[in-house]
Length: 125
Image (cartoon, rainbow, N blue to C red):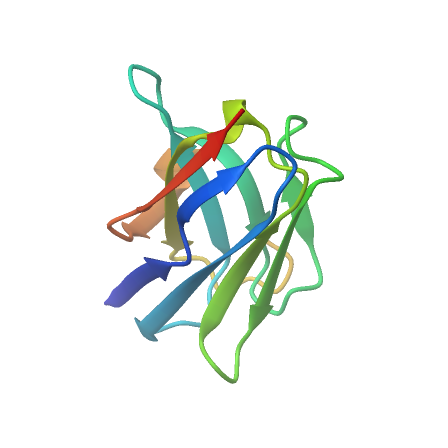
């Protein structure tokens, strides 16, 4: 079993930055991802990182602005978000897969078995 707790969300002006953290407990050495969901919209993929951090993938909408990373010693995954835009406003969720493959990543929500409770990010214009 894996438990995930996100933190770091908040209110920021357009162009600003935030860093989200996802603290994991349990069997934590897995591929991880960040997703987001805005009001009235479906949950969408943001970024993912492989088990040991050697492979990362991003949604086109955040590429070049967001960076996913992990510190396995601290069992924590991060999402550094720069140049934030109002359209980035959403609840951000951390998720973990069951895969322990060293290079595995996924954009598909159904590939993730464990989810955090989410943290709100609001970007004002």
